[in-house]
Image 1 (cartoon, rainbow, N blue to C red):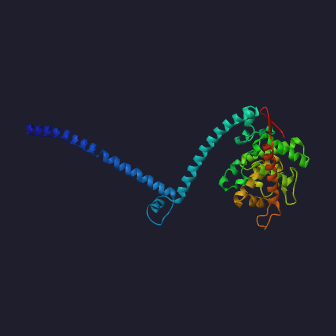
Image 2 (cartoon, one colour):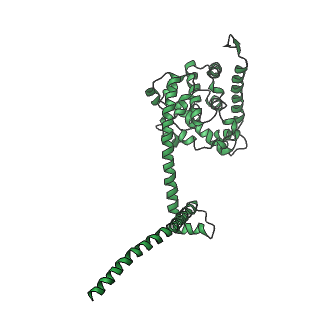
Image 3 (cartoon, one colour):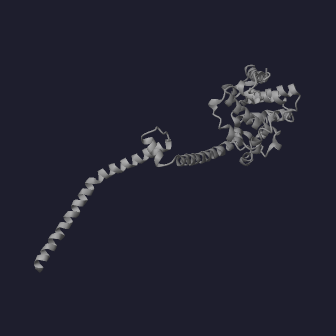
Amino acid sequence: MSKCLSNNLNEMQGVQPNVLTAKELLSHAMAPVYRVINGLLVVTVFMVVGLWLSGNGTGAGAFDLARILVPDEARHIVWSNGFGMLNQSSEAHEAAAQTADNDIAAVIYNKSKVANAAGFESAKQQTVALLMPSVAQLQVKSISHLSDRIPTSKIDPQALDSNLMGSIQNQRAVADFYEKKYNLDRAKIEEYVSKTILIAKEVNIDPVLLLAVIAVESNFNPNTKSHAGAEGLMQVMTSVHKDKYAIFGGTTEATKPEVNIRVGAYILKYLIATAGSLRNGLKYYVGAANADDDGGYSDKVMAERNRLIGLCQNRSTNRLTLNGKDIRS
């Protein structure tokens, strides 16, 4: 009996390695199948999640299955959080770009990096050559976070910068023109022209257009105030646009040129985009959106704009040279 049990035990011990070997072979043979199944599962999950995020209900099929699995509210949360992360990444890249632009500005204005860091928040303004470079050192908050939301494709090409004011000679010619026309203090007119060019770069709008609006609205007098409550160089309705002045410290700052031009430029750009053309935007700006005409306001601004364009273009074409140097005609 003992011998029989011993023989059976030996046989079982011999069978166990064979079973283990068979299992290993089966597992090895099934491994590709498992990988295919896992791959299909991953693809299926991605498809469901993609359909869920797209949220395009079709009345039947996989789109609605994806919408049923997780509610719309969760999809919106994912979208908002996802875009928030993208915005944070974008802001980080912009901060790095701003540091680089500050270094460029330091070369242009021969100022230290610290001095430039205390200037405009938006570094893209600081790389503009100006008739009065010191205005770039003013500590004024940027309004580009609002103006950049307006797609350039919505803006009438006539309202975009033609870079005529990128020339110091043209800036000086415009300052000469307005100094004589309005009998202004030379330093003040250079300040206003420089600030307008700087802000136009920030808002992404034509500085020639802004200068024309300022000329028509206030004759470059920052203390001008209308009976309706419009104030400053660009005659912005202070009571209507309190929210925009809030980022600059409130409506008490409304007549400061660097604030007033900034808010007015943003409003004008927004209205041009909303109205669909430069002329209609000017009509909205003067408050005649629902009127048959604007009393000739648009014509006045456009005539002033064209006058400045002609002044700058004539200056460019009338240059003479002697031994490689420009001579004023």
